[in-house]
Image (tube, rainbow, N blue to C red; front, side, top):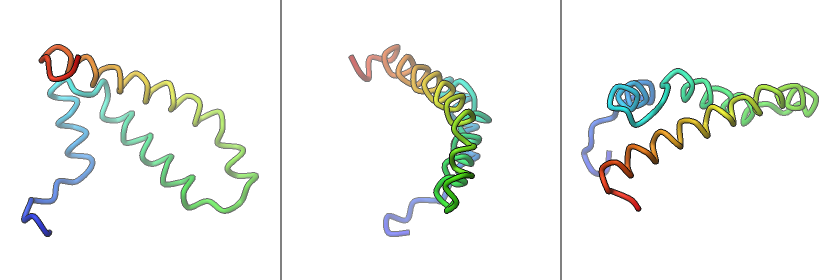
Length: 80
């Protein structure tokens, strides 16, 4: 690690974000990441097409988590 910063696993970061009120749901964010990985490594167009309904649902979940994060930052006056 170039900056000698400790590695924090993604799951731990998401759990900490939920615990501190930055995220609505760590499980949702982990599921979104898993879907992103599945899409990134899928090379059959038909399979990707079949994932569209789930992607739409995950998009709503992502939006909810972004809103939660924005509210967290606004409450602390870290953003306007």
